Amino acid sequence: MKIFLCSTSFDLEDLRALVVDRFRNRHEFIHFEDAAFPSRRGLHSHDQCIEAVKQADVVICIIDRRYGGHYRGTRLSDFPDQTVKIKFKVENENRTVDAKILTRDLSISWCELLTAFREEKYVITFARKRTMDEKATRRKNQGVADFKPAHVEDVRVFDLLDWITKQPKDNWIIPFDNAVDFLAKLEKWLAVADASMVIPATQESRGNKPIIVVVEGQVDALVVRVIASKYVVNRTVSFVVAQGKRALLGNLKIYTKAFHDAAGIIVLADADTENAADIEAQRVQFNQIIGESERTDTKVVFAVPEIETWLGEAGIKLSQIHNHKTLHDILYRFQEEVEHRKLAVPSLAEFIAMLIDLDTSHES
Image (cartoon, rainbow, N blue to C red):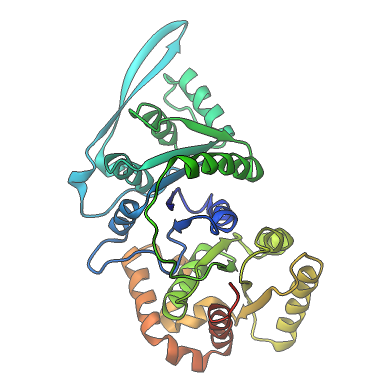
């Protein structure tokens, strides 16, 4: 089956990567972390996601604490305002209200689901149990204007969940406690889907084993995705965003264990220094942790002094850029100049060489 992963990114990137790693030998995944994610010239990135949904046989939606970015593509007429009928109780009195979510307030994930249902895709939704519990609490406090949930960032997450349950089909939501529970439940669901769906066979064009790149932050993942799209042609590239160096170090053993069947794991971290002795000391620390893990062939690359250096002067303070057009322009320029840049930046050349080596390896 071709499976589209529908979810927010920042809170679920690790879970998304685990799904692809666990089930990629049985199914083809369409996910934006893949360097070969479907793209079409002249389309807004949000509309590229919408088109990717149409290519899938199955849409797996995962919902946790974040609502996600608003849809800002050019096909507003495809996503009209949505109304969700909400039932709640105030002082033992049953009430019903209509929550209206305007087109401009629909999240990208919501629009992907609208497309999936419209295109009659097979949809299955998983939601963290804590989020489902907070939805129940929210409905009991529906009349409280300043209600703020402890886990969920935006109460519209609850509206999306209720909207899903009111669809004419595929409206069941499966709760999960943690990653282990989620993967076990997804395993069972996919087994049923395997037996009940007939999918046209397609030629396998990409290597089975993916390349896993572990990075410190989301901006780093964007930079690596640009590099991978230029050099990786045979394999899927999946990203794990550790959210900082401390978290990266603390979870390194977990990552190497979780992705034991990958073609290779590259850990990319900012050196935060140009001092060769300091960089070597960090490398020893990383390699010591890797040496204690189940997969000892994990490679470490340090961007010297940080990944913004790879992009040249335009990349300085890249993490502070919130204008998507500016960020897109910087990354596009970098893709055009990356061959030249790697001659001037040894750590960039080292990283590219590792990607190419894993991409062209003859492992199945």
